[in-house]
Length: 332
Image 1 (cartoon, rainbow, N blue to C red):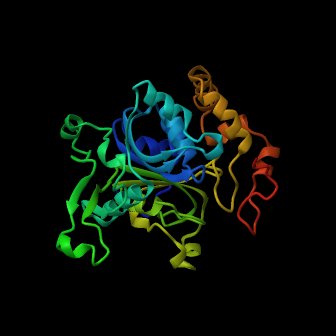
Image 2: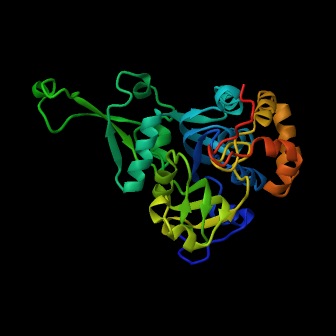
């Protein structure tokens, strides 16, 4: 962990320093909100491979990483872009072709797994998924779990409630079985936030999703942000900050770093891009052309933005000051 005072990196430097082939990485954001897209693109540019990804419910970032061949395995609750892609297309295609190994959990279970990791405990109990096939059907087999030390030996463990006798549970309105879900402790977590200071203190505005738990569970954390602010600014309202500086290893200033997904109070998602992308992602040949033209064909996120969009579209998705969203954008 970088404990130095100044943690400012370029995106190229941060990815090179902290993400290696085969790492277990966690991606922040939720569907088309605050995906760390600039960092995902840089991972693709540096041709990182065999990544094991954890995500709560992610869309665009996960899909592009998978489509680019950077991801070998993923543990996730949901991969989709809402109406633009109820199930992400690269994600779906790679599974159907046997090129992506997937372990699925419920949304709540993924939250609990990150929470357990952030607390330094090995698992969390829940009733979630009792009576469903999430318990019965495993994506990773026993052989893989025994070979890969970073993967939990069991997907899920069922246990009896240890505190009450079965005959008393119905009286206390409690179920007799619990579902234990394993903790997640990634090598690296990547999140995009609105503000951070040079020491890594990070402020997320709007819904934080599971990002805070993901960051605290991880060995290393890369934060990309819309603004790098003076540390005294974040000290004015310390209770509004989400991730303490000692959890963060690298801070990267990337305006519009979540584009084409939304970043509350700064910009909304871009429906024009997402409609265009779904036609590309469904066809592997078109997706490869997209990678070559817009990711490998650009040096950084600024060049990507200049090539993929224009001033009018950026203005159309700009967030309204009071609501935090674009109020003129056509969402249907």
